[in-house]
Image (cartoon, rainbow, N blue to C red; front, top):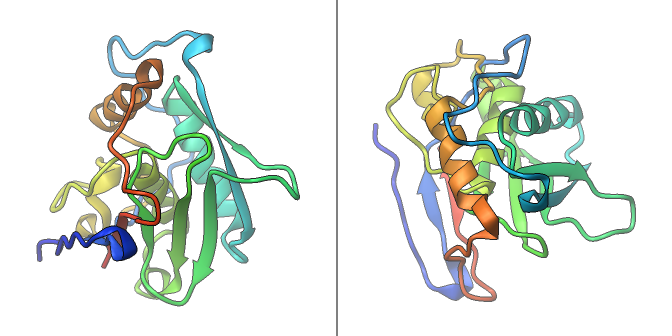
Length: 196
C-alpha cells in the first residue's frame, strides 16, 4: 500500500507518509557517499530532547549514533536540561511520525515514537533512526528494501537496519551543505510525516 500524502495550510500542515521499521545493526557505520566529506566549519549542530520519550531512550541514543556516524555536516547532540531543543522526541501510543525537515538550529522538529509499530514487531532503533531521517529532510521510499532506512514498514517487521544507505546519507549531506537554505513550513505550520 502506498503512503497517503496530505498537505494542509499553516495551521494544520500535515504530510502522511509510511513508517519505516529499521533493522538494528550491530554497528551503525556504512560507507560515506563519495564526495560527502565536509569541513568542521560547515557542521550544523541540532540539539534534541528525549525526556518525554520514556521507554525509547536506548533507541533514540542508537538512532542518533547511527546518523552521527554516517553523515559529516550535521550532528545531533543531547540538549542540556532546561535548554531549548531543536528536536523533541515524544513516546506515544499511536503510529510513529515526525516533522519533515530539514530541521535547522532554532527549529521545531518533533518525533513521535509510536508504540503501535512496536506492537506489530517493528524494531525501536530502526523506528527512531527512520524518524530522525524525516527531521533531517528525507521522505519515505516505499516500497523499498531493508537496506534503505527510509523504506520504513515496507521492508517488513523483521528488518532491523538502522543505517542510512549511501543515497540517504548523500541527501542529508546535501540538505545541510554549507548551511544551505531550505523550504520550511510557514510559522505556525508543521509538516508531519505519518508513517502508518
